[in-house]
Length: 378
Image 1 (cartoon, helix red, strand yellow):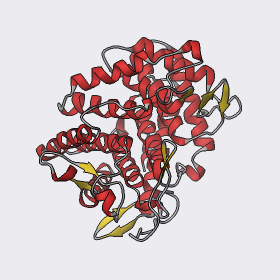
Image 2 (cartoon, rainbow, N blue to C red; image 1 turned 180 degrees about the vertical axis):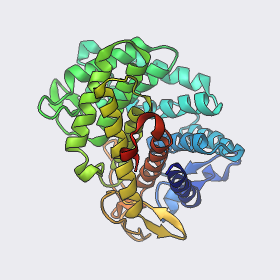
Image 3 (cartoon, one colour; image 1 turned 90 degrees about the vertical axis):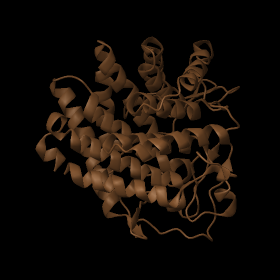
Image 4 (cartoon, helix red, strand yellow; image 1 turned 135 degrees about the vertical axis):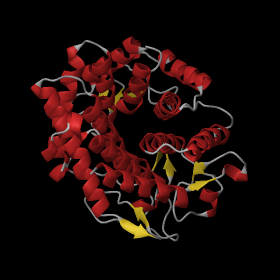
């Protein structure tokens, strides 16, 4: 079981490496992911590059190194980090707190788990989240600088990062508490997107659920406070009921949405492997989270296409993937977000999510004897 998922994750990694990984502007010692396949000339030249997609590519490389440690992957991780900074004009930061939180998470894991450390970058990014906390304005931290939109996609990953980074547990708890007090749907117990000008933005995205599960699981593991595990129990049940028809996590198309289901899978896997406790509710949450990951993984694998011997994942894991072509409409950057390509499978985001899911399934299956009952893992 474990080896099957390891093989699938390795195939997903090889697909990204073959189709998407290129040197940045031909510079030695660099790498980034080309944002589409097949790619247009502007994409191959990294005229578009999407900061937060690259952060998830780095996070996936860390997953792969944990699964199958190799010196050449450490080289790839170093190149990805260097390419990211160079393409971002020599900086780690940008104007979007959610983007910066995704990079902080990936860099923190790269340092802690693979030894490829960037301590100055982590310090600079942590300072961004700590200094932008504005409870007097209704936050939370905002979505981007000079903005009054306070949302789960910024506060969730920032809270996960701060929970892991240099003992910033108190601020991480404040962020988790703010989300719980402000953004939980009283009817479904799912997480709303955010709050703008005092009004709820009521959209409910899969990745918002994922980052809150991640933050609360980290806090449950690192504090004695029972409220965090209780929130995980409630949210895992809500996700299973409302966001995974027939046990398969819902898709959100391509563009930025291509990553949403993968992020939820990543943090469901964290619940399955890291949520502490021996109570019935703890065991149930871990088993449900594991089952969602493995059921989604099986569906995504069964619905993949194969191109040149390597998998191409669907944007919606419960439907067959469509092979993309070069002549169709590209993804477009509109008002701070990337809209889908005409064929969403063309987008790097969609393929990163498929790879992320395979790594998540591997981590869940690998821990089956500890955290998942045999009938769930089957």
